[in-house]
Image (tube, rainbow, N blue to C red; front, side, top):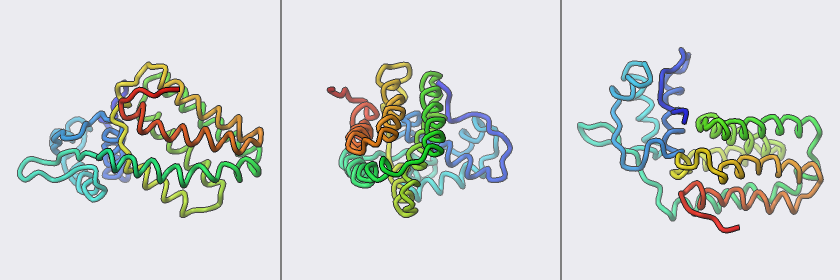
Length: 222
């Protein structure tokens, strides 16, 4: 598996780059709940000084990803079952209903763009490249929602995605479940292109539900 934590390319916003890499590692379960993190150790792994790492950790603390541990560093926080359930239900309330309108109005150019993004999701799943998989998945869903023209909706879902944890994801490398979840993005596009709003709603609802199932290390029943 490709790790989120490794040497970084030179960036104008190094703190931001480190922050998003750490956030992705926490969301995917690469850095598990309760794990203790220190800026010097992470800085060595990233190939940067401890300063941008420490700044990134302070921002992650504000976002609820970590908590400070006196004289030790930061500990990865846990997201309770209730928290995760609430996030998933909110996402379903926000992301499922727009599928009908999008199915009626989506244009060929948008379909082509989203197909390219879906291809990247499938390829990164096959390559066990979890950082790219997560980035591509978020990009696909937010790009799709942008078709509603509702910026607040997009930002609300972006915020909910940042709060989500998928601690079972790192154990799904090479599994049928990961492949199925990846290809669901193409199945969704099939329904949207066919103007099947109801089918797109049903698939989106089930797709988001994976956060409580596969992504949380649980078996799902068909």
